[in-house]
Amino acid sequence: MPLQLVDPFRAAPLAEFPLDSIGDVERKLERARTAQRAWSRVPLAERVREVQHAVRYFETNLETIASDVTRQMGKPVNEARGEVKTLLARAKYMGSVAEEALAPVVVPGKPGFTLRIEHAPLGVVLDIASWNYPLIVPVNVVVPALLAGNAVLLKHSPLTPLAGAHFERAFEGLSIQGLVQNVVLTNADTEHLVADPRVDYVSFTGSVATGKRVYAAASRRVVDVGLELGGKDPAYVADDGDLDFAAANVVDGACYNAGQSCCAVERAYVHHSIYGAFLAKAKAAMEAYVLGDPMAETTTMGPIAREEQLALLERHVQDALQRGARLVTGGKRPAHLGGWFFEPTLLADVPNDALVMQEETFGPILPIARVMDDDDALARMNDSRFGLTASVWTKSAARAERFARELQAGTVYQNRCDYLDPALPWTGWKESGIGSTLSRFGFAAFTHKKSIHFRG
Image 1: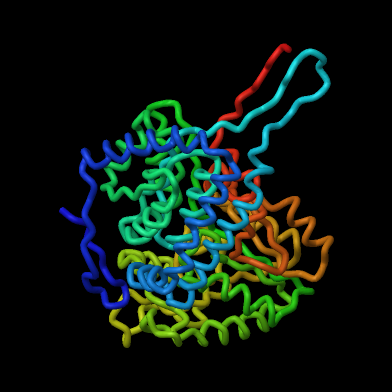
Image 2 (image 1 turned 45 degrees about the vertical axis):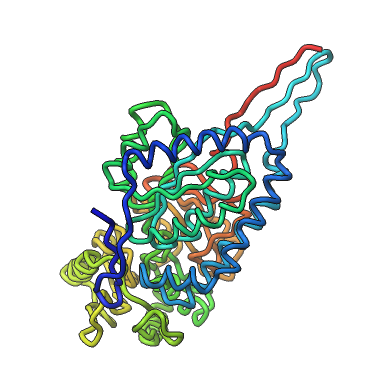
């Protein structure tokens, strides 16, 4: 049976996509292994040049790619264009630091010996990418893996297989064919591929539950796995924060991409002295969103990508209300829209044991609680099984540094949120995952450390 794609705006069939057979996967695996052996012998400077040239495909075909993203998962087309541009920026940065990051490390000081550490490619990398950012999630893996000398099998989400096809098409321009191949598989066939000894590294982005299954499949043999599993990212608005700026940006951090981001602001803690004023400004920002056809230039929030997620959003809202929270705005599916939409939702006075404060929501819901001081905020922010990002909205550098030291998160922001800088490693604590991508440290996952010990 082919893969059935559904348009989340119209809640109607969009297209069919053929699944790979076992024979298809075998051929792609062997092709990848052959291509990688040849690619590993290409000098690094040439690999960088070729990859940077291939990535221009996304710039040349920006409108088509953005449209495909929007039709598949509902992201407003303006946001989809922005995602293409972010892909280009990340690829450019990773190319700019590749030679420094992958340069051999020479160990001095032992007469008569040559000691150095080489960064040797792993072989074939399997990248299991998510649908919410179908371009910038895989580029975090595909580009550094290629630059390090590997081949990549890209298994994209069943919601966004066209993105995988675009990646394959882009890198057909490399001098060696078969270095990036798109595979379209069932969950069961994906687990078999994870366990295949010809796969030398597995990168997965998605839910904790699925990440655990991928990890279990990989554990049948000795292979390294990188997991980026989402978060429950907190924001703290301190009493000295810029109220207008913080309210606008925290709401944007909660609602961008309809809240379907692993690093979205999923809970906020506001100092008691500004609590009421913050709620009023956040409510106004929430109610300014324009829901509708994501292909329309005026739409600022599209549908939820998965129909089943709507019931989870409703459950999180109802659970919070039953525990004493107050609904400020939103909280339901809009009656006038036929697709998989959910209103931007603001909840106040939410207790920290509510589902919406503890479980990943992945929708345009912002739950807010009042806190008395910094200690209160820190305790509540760290009260989570996740640890991807956290943001502190304050003018005080000393306060920001204290939160940076004590927050259990991979990235801590001051006066910013929901953003990845490619110069910094993207990594999570606790159940937000293991390993990291981006920055010069992002190359480490895609190489073996080979010790060279020569006596002259």
